[in-house]
Image 1 (cartoon, helix red, strand yellow):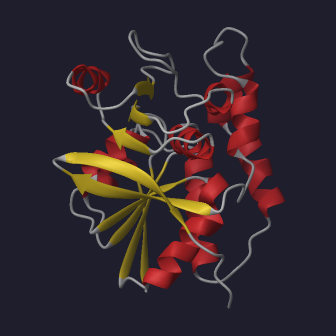
Image 2 (spheres, one colour):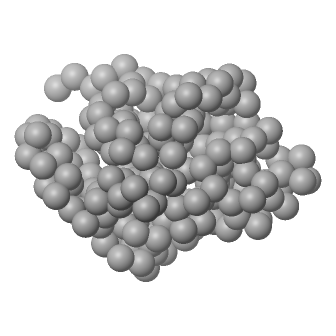
Length: 234
């Protein structure tokens, strides 16, 4: 198995084989919590206006996402793990739009299989890939708006590579690096209330969920669903 490491939209476009598109703060932590809260599926759309248009056309029961960290007009939820953790979305179909994770998934058109990556589903995602045994795995850290690398996504990529290859990193050390990172500080800035400190806490609960999140291409849409599985045993 060849594992290729990449960053940002440019490398998402080059992703081949099985891709893991990473967005820790916050899209794919939010998506995982939405599934845990009962969501049936999540349709990923890069642009907020496209999400609204799809919704007006009958796609999705609820909208969640962000533009510059804020919930867009007409959306039900922001792109916040904390906000969605307090919602009941049982049986609901969601449409999610963000400027990093969902853009990366849309860009990864050449990948055969796409998983959504974050710490809360790291081990389950690694297990799914190890069982699949693809020739090529492309791990892409999407960073800040898909344009600037961020510590949390880069560290998540390295963490995933290690556990896919059978090693067990010290997550405490990984967490310390992320907490010191520049992208983390906005969650503790009272001038930016759209970012909740609880978002960081939830995003760094490693292996909290025992499912992966796999993308299907359906009628031109990118649809994520839970892929539940037992833990891989060496």
